[in-house]
Length: 287
Image (cartoon, rainbow, N blue to C red):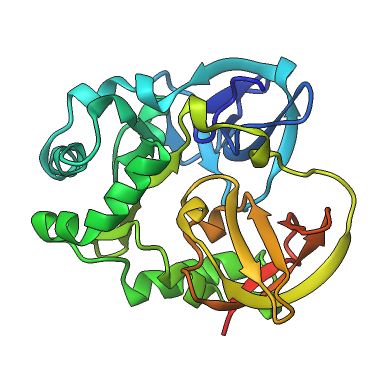
């Protein structure tokens, strides 16, 4: 096991900024998504003056660990002690159910970009995720904010449809399952993220990055709590009673299904019962 954790960030030798996806990575490589490309034509800048443009493509890449030049961890974000207004209210609501040591802040503030829209929270621990999920309606009521809006679902669906194969996905339905998103303002949503604690990381989180064959499976979703983490993981039982484990790192599938959903999975069978969604032709369709 290495020490690269989901939702950590790093700057590479070109100055580009990546977000880590997952916990167990191939030897000497880090699974990542390029999130900010350094360019003089960028429309946003860090406080040191470096300019960047945001990469909107939900693409997973593997980068040599030797290229990492600077590393950032959400639990070390100093903004946590200087929150104000709505973000302080949200932090306090989360802190009603989760210890402060288990709450981190990732996103632009961790990278020393000015905070212009929202503050991104990540909560560590499976039990903490269950606790927040059980109390999310109380949290939303206390903050006087609704869940994800239909307009935002439609916006996100159109954005992800540009890359994820629309014929194998029902993005409007999978996005509507995202219980951990609240609507802060028109056009501005905030999604809670969840990460594993060190003692919860085991071989079951392996990416299964190996050859396989594409397969389509229909069945019933048996569990959903690990769809809130990376990789997003859930089990599906088909009509024959065979149980398949579905894994994917794509952001589009965060909290994508609920127990009891009837789904069609298009992915790559990399083991007797493990299906990996690892290219844009794969997908999750909810009936």
